[in-house]
Image 1 (spheres, rainbow, N blue to C red):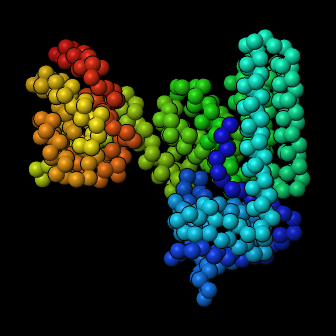
Image 2: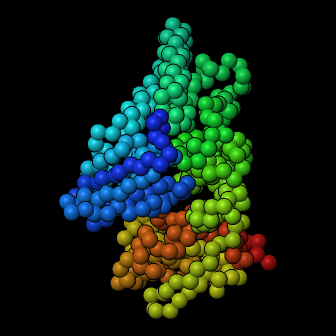
Image 3: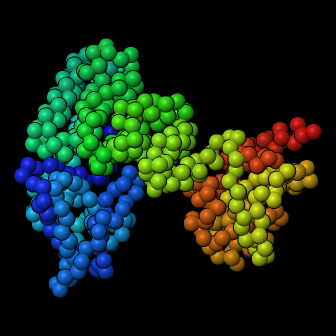
Length: 452
């Protein structure tokens, strides 16, 4: 399993109600420093730090709730994840622009988590090596080596169990991190309970988690662990059924809880990245469950889900209007009644330019039968855009906001690479994505041969 870099905290005894902790940040090149918290899909500003006479930034935070993990930096794209509230004074040294490489100085809590990360990496390495060796031995029918690897994996599982117990006794918050990352080997642990490893994985991946513990609601590893879980399952279950499986797992958390929101947010993030067919169903469940309680998180999921809906055949194509090279505007809605190919391209895109002769060919063949192309350029320079249109003899409609990869139209359709196309029917519904060359010509022939 892949463990991503969230730095989490551990709860030490002796942190009493009413206590507070000081944070001091000595970072070069910083105009401002903020303390952030993860909210399930994004970051919130907890408070800004104040600059003192020496140029350091300081703040004081209450610690009645015990240690927690937060983020320090000048902007959310450049932060150091740290555990706060476990030291009377947390001192951080670093440089703005590279805060991820900053260091929490002489902080036992942060040092404890650094060691835990190394342990996770060692477990992951030993598991991967052991499974590879076992599978290689199985192919050779080398029973002795197979048994040796099973014993090594059994020892690994025992180490994982001991880590759960050890951290639970010593660092309760750190123990929650461990429970989100403790998967025991199917070969040794299943013992006939589940018919295959997929069922075993789904049912036992979070076997050490206490779903009633409210502490998981402020734990980014609740998000991150579920992101890893969904990411692994996305390769094994390539259809919408994955949403039902994930939702059954999320039902283990109390309804409406922040922990359930974190878990669902992590799963959704994994599926969005994969453009998985189950993404929209999971998003709809998230929106329905949390619309009233977590509006900020729901709004972000809604926006991301809107782009994913453009990957669903039969979905409504999102409408947009954009500026033409001549200074006018064209809207997708104005093309209702025609079959429209939305063609995302750019003058600087070599594959796009090489594909253009094929697009010209099908346009000339079907433009008089109700076919239109709306070229959406991801250019930044108008002159290059116009020149490419002329050079490639692209006689169809064109728009661009000249914002490159930040194009609002590209983002609306989840475009992360070009050339990319979306074929829309006469009623404005999506027929297909990424048809090019012979596949596009075949689809158009099918459409126009059946037109009445």
